[in-house]
Length: 200
Image 1 (cartoon, rainbow, N blue to C red):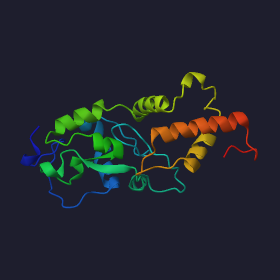
Image 2 (cartoon, rainbow, N blue to C red):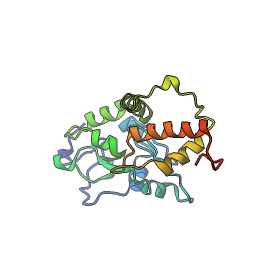
Image 3 (tube, one colour):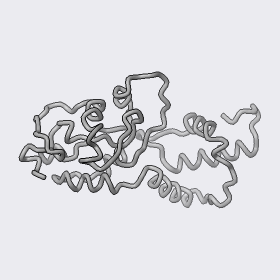
Image 4 (spheres, one colour):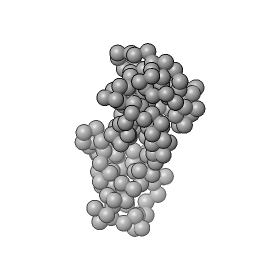
């Protein structure tokens, strides 16, 4: 592959030297048929999510929107340069991917598009990353999952609602300790009942 200085992108297209960054919808439209071939990742156009870890946000859509426009509404997704602007990267769709903030911060900012793609393919899933963070949070909260006897499958919708009402994101991010603390509180509510007869 030729470098970005030779005005070719990772997919072999010529750089158009765009001044403004494309919308999320335009980035998805650009990559939807070739993302696996050139970036090695899969995207489902109808289900927005991070192209590295797969995180799909917590907010439920309240209204029907055009499938591409839905990507523009996902505030948790950043437009990320494959080759950063600081290294002469451009704003063309071929130099952009959509990542959650955590993956955007973790992504390599170098001149090498190939290393970026290697990182993109090697990134653990959101569930794997979250599991490790929750295990660390459990240690900090002196909590053992061995003693956790609540069937979350039976209470999935109620817990998600409880989480939305009781967990406060800081800087746009929900700390794993907050998530786990809500899980512990939720379990206590379920096992102890609530005076209103409702969990949330």
